[in-house]
Structures are given as C-alpha cells and as structure tokens.
Image 1 (cartoon, helix red, strand yellow):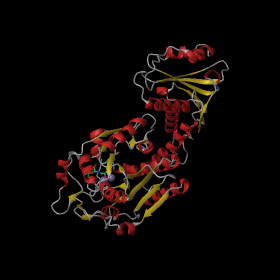
Image 2 (cartoon, protein in one colour):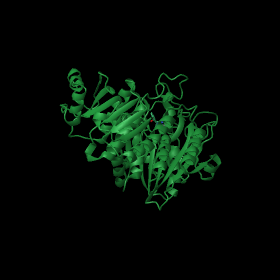
Image 3 (cartoon, helix red, strand yellow):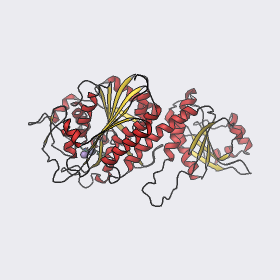
Image 4 (spheres, helix red, strand yellow):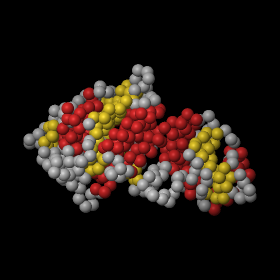
Length: 492
Ligand code: BES
Ligand code: MN
Ligand code: ZN
C-alpha cells in the first residue's frame, strides 16, 4: 500500500473512494466541499440528511456517486467538536475511512481532512499512521486467509502537497509498530527466545545497528542469577539481547529501553490455574516486542541520540529443573531475592536487565513490561501504568504518550509498601501482598537502579485488545512503540 501527498485539487481527484472530514454540528457544506456537492448533484447533502450525519467523532457515512462520476463512493467521517482538537482524532478518522474503503472495495482512496492546528506536517503523519495501522492484517497463521491483504492499495492525501517527509516517517514508525504486533500475536511455539534473538539480529543487519546476544554462560559470568533462575526450567536457551543504535555525530544523550521478554509465562511451579488466562501468556514478551519495534523505527529515523535496546528473553516453564517456590536467587548487583512466587518472574528478568543497562552509563532508562494483573485491575485495558521516582522523566514520557494518543497514567511509588517485600532470609521477596501489586512490582524493580533516571511502564492492559479500538484491530496493539519513538526524538 502506498500513501502519497498529492496536489490534485479536490474537485479534480478521481478514484474509487473519496473521504471528507466534517466537524460536529458544522455539517453545512462550504467552500470546495459545497462545490463538490454541486458537481455530484447534491449527493453529499442528501447523504447527510438521510443518515442524520452530525459529524460526531468516529461516525461515518458512505454512498455511491452515480452518473458516470470519476469517483465511485464518497465517504464522510466525523471529527467531533472543533474546540477539542487532538491530533489523535485525525489518526482515528483516517482509520475509520481506511476500514470503510476496504469494506467498500476501494482500491484507491482519497482523503481530504482539514489541517490540524495549522500543522500540515503533523496532519499528514497522523493520517498516514492511522490508515496504515488500521489496515494491517495478520494472515501469517491462516492457510487460506479469508481476507487477502487490505484491498486498498493507494491512499492520496489531498490538500497536503509537499508533505512527503512526514509520510515517510509514518511508514518507518508503523513498520516498528507492526513488528511489535506480529511478535506479540505469534504464539509461543513460533516466537521463542531463539527467534527473538534472530529477529534482533535481522534488524541489526538490515538497519545497521550493533547487536550483542549474551548466551546463558555469558549471563552466568555476569552473575545474572535472577534472570537465569526464571530460565532454568525451559528447554529453550535464554537469550539476553542488546541492540545499540549510535548516531553518526556525537549523541545529544544516551538512553536505554528495556522490555520484559517472557515468551511464555506458565507461572512456573506457582502455575497459572484455570481462568488465569494462561492461554494468552504468549503476549508476555510484549515489552521486548515494543523494544524491538522501537529499534526498527529508530534505526530508520536516525535521531541524534544513542539508544540501547535490551531484553532478557526466556520462557517461564516447569520441569525437574524449575525454581522451587522459596528458592533464593542472587542478581547481578549482588542483591538476594527469595522467590516466594515463581509467577512474579518478569521482575526477576528485568532486575538483571536494569543492572546491565545502568552499567552502560546512560542518562535515562525506560522499561516496559506486561508485569502485573494488578495494573489491569487499577487502570483497565487501555491505560499503561507509569512508575518513576524522577518527575522530569515521568513528564517527558507523559508528553510523548499524549502526543501519539497512547494512554499512560502515573502511579505512586509508595515507599512504605516496600515493607510487603521484606524477607526474613534474603534481601527481599519477589512478591508482596495482592493490594497495590503493581506498585510493589515497581518498588522491586527500583532496587536494581542506583542513580540513573528510570521509569517503568506496566503495559499488561494495553498490549492487547479484545475488540477493535481506534486504529487497533482486535489482538496485539504494538502499544508503546510510538511513545518511545516520540520520546527519543523529542528535544529535552
Ligand atoms: N505476566 C504476568 C502479568 C500479566 C497478567 C500480564 C495478566 C498480562 C495479563 C506476570 O508475570 C504475573 O504472573 N504476575 C502476577 C504477579 C503475582 C504473582 C504477584 C500477577 O499479576 O498475578
Ligand atoms: Mn507471571
Ligand atoms: Zn509474566
């Protein structure tokens, strides 16, 4: 599918489907749209009246244009009230029309939306992102896909001539989001620690990143007892992935992005029971998928920032080699952990990844993890929990997420709750009481960061959606890639 910004006037454009955006309660046609309506013998006015189209955000209407017109279908999409204009409305509107065009079998789609906030560059990027993300369809595991490709093979952005760069940027970012979605959606017998390492290597060789894969023995030498404790019951070897993007000029800052990479979480000997959603636990590498997706996008966008992409990838399984509940592990910073619950495994893998990242001497560390069910209970399926002792970094991430339409919400790092992790025998336990479970998880992670600015995003909710939601189809969302990219690109 190709997206182009073209200079054809609205009245002259030809193609199967033309989509027009209208604001809420402002559906009287004016200017070029009124002229277009005249050209189509009043079909737009008729459509608005017939469908009682009010321009509500996300609403749409479609009709056939008869009379040998060079346009087969005309679509309207609502943009909501013009006084609360978020760029994400444009992404969502593009998603609505792209899906409608696909349903209406329009191979070539023209999109004409007003310019957001006098910013044609942001407008073009948002429309290109929304359309691509909505049209992505995963047919990898179907022997005969019901739905072969998107059906839409060309999208023309009208009124945005010259905006080729933002479209290219959208393509690069979406390639990262789609990689993350594909990794998360693939089952645990297709995406394993070994294939995750291969994917990292493939990104490195395609886009010129440095790559280092630490094997079990390398991790042993570094004393990564927490990560290796989780890995010890699996028949598939663990892989510690470290990709590095270095700009050509001296970097303005250096950051590390860490993702939880548990390719399947059985719970270990504290095995997940009936109703626990064990069959969905292929998505427990969502943080690592986001990290690799961000690596793919950032490698193409080439910012002046050095970025390390890290994941300690393993399965959490059971076998005669499994951790016993109650085992004591020693992490690579020397701290000892009593594993009172083998199902709180993500934080064990992240502990060693955080210690590794801090040794790189970066200015900031952000980790993303499908860490706790408790975070879903707190914030629901659409919102990630943001935990950070650093107000500056937290604000940067909030701004980055807001701009791309991903929802994150800052949670408290209530120090007192660390009492719940106190152990009689080791430095700490890995699991606290059920109340405040996402907070104690974050407090646990904090033990493995000494002085670097650090933030943790618990993405257990938004990594996946059961139903179509904006530009996400049901399934893996690729959540976090766009926030991370925007955060790395931002001037701070
Ligand atoms: N991977 C899970 C968290 C999770 C749960 C992600 C549901 C997505 C959906 C994590 O490893 C886990 O099992 N957490 C436990 C922690 C508990 C044992 C302290 C949880 O949330 O129940
Ligand atoms: Mn678990
Ligand atoms: Zn897990």
